[in-house]
Amino acid sequence: MQTRVAQEPKGRILVVDDNDEIRRANERVLIRAGYEVEVASDGLEALEKMEDGGVDTIVSDISMPKMDGIALLRTVREGDLDLPVLLLTGEPKVETAVEAIQHGALRYLIKPVPPEVLEQEVQYAVRLYAWAKLRRVAEDEVGGDPLRAGDRAGLAASFGRALARMWMAYQPIVSCAKKEIIGYEALMRTDEESLHMCEAILRASERLGRCADIGRTVRRLVATSLTGRGGRQQVFVNLHVRDLLDESLYDPYAPLGSHADHVVLEVTERAALDEISDVGSRVTRLRQLGFRIAVDDLGAGYSSLTSLAQLQPDVVKLDMSLIRDVHKHPIKQKLVSSFATLSKDMGITLIAEGVETVDERDTLLGLGCDVFQGFLFARPAQGFPEVDWQ
Image (spheres, rainbow, N blue to C red):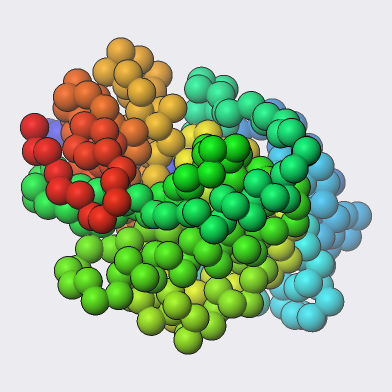
C-alpha cells in the first residue's frame, strides 16, 4: 500500500465576495487547483485576513458592503505595490475599469468567470508575484548601481558630438547546448571622449530632454548594420523607457521597422514605467509590427510587478550582478535556479548576462540556464563577432 505524500499548496489565495454562492464556488475551484484559500465577505474582513501576510493573490468582487473591491485595492497598494489583485464584477462599467487599472489591478474580469479562466489567471498572478519577491531578494543581495551626477558645463555640445560620433558594437548571445549563436546585443559606443561611457550618454540625454534623439540614432545605426545581412539571429536593441513615447518607434517605414521580425527590444528593469500610462497598448503595437520584447537587468532594478505584467516579455535577462561569482554564492544560486524554473513555467527565454568564467558557466548550466552572454564567449566588437567555444 502506497502512502500519499501531501503536496505543498501552490500559493495562498484570498477570495473576497459578499455573494456566498460565488465565493464558495471560486474557493472550490482554487482548492481543486492546489491552492490554499482564505475567504472574506468584504474588504474590511479581507484586510483582517491579510494581517499575518503570506497572501500571494487576491481575487475580489468589486461591489461589496463596508469596503468595496476598488477601496480594497487602493488600501493594498498603500502597503504593497506588487501583490496581484484580480477584480471581478457582474456590472462592468468603463469608469470602474479605468479606476481599477489606475490603482494597479492585474485583471478586470466579468462574472461569471469560467473555472478554467479563473484557474489560469490565478496561476499567472501567483507566478508574477513569485518574480516580484525574488526580485526584492536579489536587490537586497546584490544592490544596484548608484546614480552619478554629471557636469552640466558644455553638456549639450558634448552630447551633440557624442551622437555624431556614435557607432554600434555587437556581442553574441549563445546557447551552450546547441553550440550556436542565437542573437547579438547591439551596444552603443562613441568616440567622444567627454561622454565615452554609455551611462554618461544616457544621463546626458535625460538631463537635456533628448532621449528621443539617442533612441533614433541607435535604431538608425542598427538598421544600417542589418541591411543586406543574412542569418536568422535576433538582434537585441536597448530601449530607454521614454523611447516608448516616441511615435517614430511605431512607424513601420522607419529604419528599424523593416527588420522588426529579427529585433528584440530590451526595456531595462532599472527604469520605472510609471510615467507611461498606456504601456500595454504601446507594447501591443510593437508586437504587431513584429518586434519581440525583453526585460533587461532583472535582479538589479526597482520596478514593480506591474512592469512585468504590462510588458509580458518574451525574454528576460538576468543582471550580471547576480551572475558574478555565482559559483561561490549559494544565495545567488538559489535565486538563479528559481528564476530559471519560473521562466520555463511561463514560456520565457532566460539569458544570463556577464558570464566571464568557466566556473560561472558550468554552475549556471547546473542551475537550469543555457542561454548566455559575456566575455567568456566574446567581447563586444564592430561587426558581428564569432564565439570562442571553451
